[in-house]
Image 1 (tube, rainbow, N blue to C red):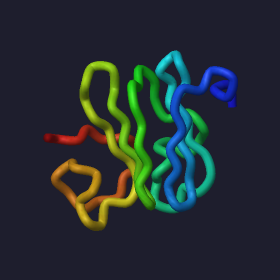
Image 2 (cartoon, rainbow, N blue to C red; image 1 turned 30 degrees about the vertical axis):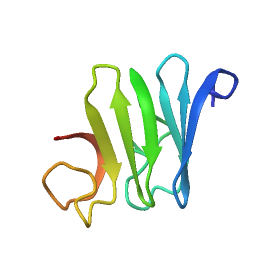
Image 3 (cartoon, rainbow, N blue to C red; image 1 turned 60 degrees about the vertical axis):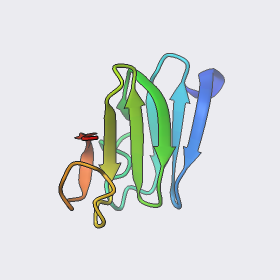
Image 4 (cartoon, rainbow, N blue to C red; image 1 turned 90 degrees about the vertical axis):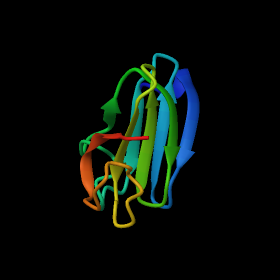
Length: 94
């Protein structure tokens, strides 16, 4: 991962990790059982300001102040008004 020398934040779920670099790039690694890595590869998205990891989901605050969530959604924790697991980031409505 190219973020290691440029890392500004790290978040860990129960079986996945998130890294945010100074350029606003968000990376993820480890288990993707519920789609919590976002795209199935290492890079999720760019223009990210902040990250958080749940047990099997991840949430990102983008620089435009919108929230994106990905992963397990059995209890509605992704905030997209569904209970559908997502492997690609969806907008959180608040």
